[in-house]
Length: 170
Image 1 (cartoon, rainbow, N blue to C red):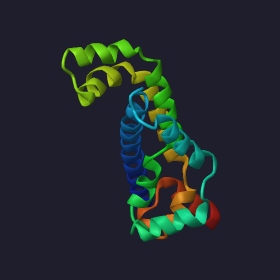
Image 2: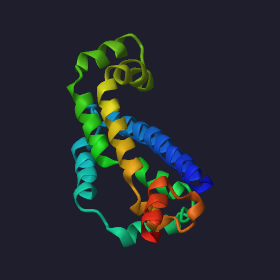
Image 3: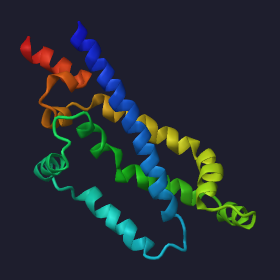
């Protein structure tokens, strides 16, 4: 069935692009939160924790996706899922477990924040990045509800919506 293979292709696109963006946002948000010199670090972490526990719900999310012009597009599933506070906190906790002396010795050698992140922190944090990637892959692969809400066009829906449609039609 051609529709099934198209749904497979879109599902793979959603999984790969969302996983890359989640890893990128998790690392770039978690790294500054490990710096003890960051002013207001505790308030920023508290600011991140509040929406993790108390979400706005479906209607504000739908209105946000609609106002951003993402409704009925492939980006309606990728962009909102690319920022996950739980993964940022997991990555920050792992980064905080790395010795501060690594950062200090890299500073003495003349490294800036980007090179410290790219050359020291990311290679040492492969285990947590693998965990975040696996969680994201499984989450995106199994998600069908956001496609049902944000994508009325059946041509861009993932495999899970295609299978759901087959089950309902039978």
